[in-house]
Length: 247
Image (tube, rainbow, N blue to C red; front, top):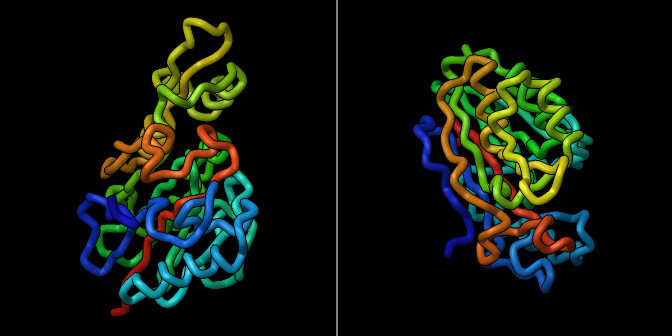
């Protein structure tokens, strides 16, 4: 087991990206041990120690753009505010990381094939249905066909039960093709199992993006590597980040 996961995608050489695991930090239970979230009642000095270790060990990185995530579709420009209310961030600047924290929600990162622009988005079901992917993609000047997307660790469909109202929101937002991302729970009327990975792919493809990678983890099932809010309640957060190395 490692402190982080490196995406398997054909990003340009000047693009660095990773998702941390829960391994190797200094947080105590139930946040053990590499929690990077300051909003979950972990000791703040401990969180800062974990964050500083991450910054120190990412070659060519000078700053991480942390967000106050509110399950919105807002996109911040990295480096302009300390901790803005947003669920995605974008930059064309080197040495500053776009970063999102998760513990079941879907983290996704984007870059263009030329390695000029980058973004990270926190895509739980509310953000997905609300257009966080659309708003993030809209920041790029590159052609949609030149964008690369990696889907980081999120809860898998078999473990993510939602009500009929959630399914309805996606049908209204994405159209009838969203139906394929929901499976009815045979034992509970009006309940479905939702596939965040598939919902993200549906939306990305609708926007003209075809180079989509990742999507093969489950934060709920893998308790050794990942935090899961649905599994544990009070818990820590992983961070998924992407940055450009200096020119």
